[in-house]
Amino acid sequence: MTKKMLPQMRRRVLPFSFLLIPVLTLLALLVGGAAYAQGTAQPPVEMADTLRADGKIWVVVGVMTIVTLGVLTYLVRLDGKVGKLEKRVREGGR
Image 1 (spheres, rainbow, N blue to C red):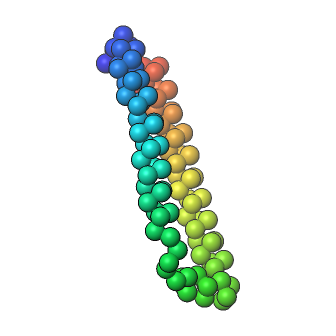
Image 2 (tube, one colour):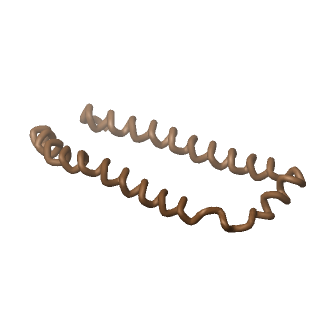
Image 3 (tube, rainbow, N blue to C red):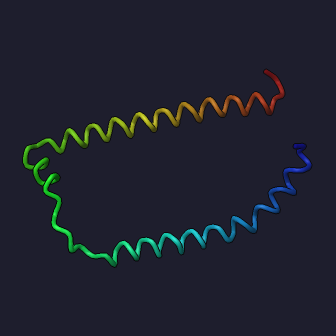
């Protein structure tokens, strides 16, 4: 694609993205409303109470924190690598 084609493509995408956001918002509200309408008729989760009572809930929180930090670190590094590649492509060099 040439640079002359990019502004034309952006103009075509703009109306679609303008409609996409309200549609997705409405869909999210409908799904959330359906989930809320089911109520809390289910009994409380015993496993969570047991983990909390034994003090093991902190193990779960720790593992979740480590996994989340790992994923975020990976994404940040990947973003840096992609940024370097984009810069190389813009400059036209290797």
